[in-house]
Image (tube, rainbow, N blue to C red):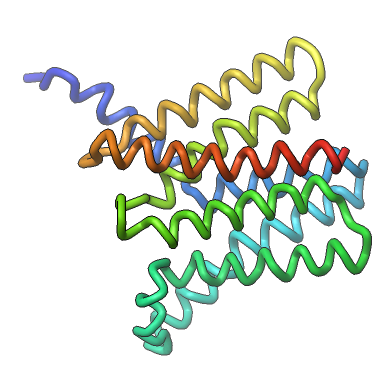
Amino acid sequence: MSVPGAGPRRSSVQVRRLLLPGAVWAAILFAAPFLNDDGGEALLWGAGAAVLVSLFPWALVTILDRRGDLRRGLDRLGAPPVILGAAGACFMVLRVIRWTDGPRALAAVVFAMTTAYALTSVFAKVIRLDWADVTYAASAVVLPVLLFLLFPGAAGIAAALAAAALFIAALLSGKARTARNTAGAAAAGVVSAGIFVWLLQYSV
């Protein structure tokens, strides 16, 4: 016997499982350098930033957690250790971009991501912001803008609209969340995306 609404609910859960925040930001970090560079240089910047910011903190925290080396004091800062590690990696990427005059579009993404981290950490206990929801809200703007600029024309517009619709659907499909929580995550995402768009005008 089928349960009404079970199909759409199950589909939304699957979408959120596929759109892991780390993977989403990794894709954005990977794509951003191609606005400033071509070929191998952009590939190196994108892959390096994606690994350093998205993969390395997760791997490091996972190893330290299994060894029991994480300090409980990290919880007092209001953000998971993975987010704190990624924030530190973001700072490192910004320094390298500055030292080497690297792709400024990548710096715009890193600033947006750092803003999303900060807002999530500051307001998480007040309105229970979820990092995944903030990521979806920010990505509903950031990724479509990147796709539109990378692929001018009808194809870019179609890809941008599809990406925006996907992330908005992911944001709205969360379980056990009030309208206030959703609105808070959307506001945090819009602020971080606004930082990206504002900086991007000086980056390309």
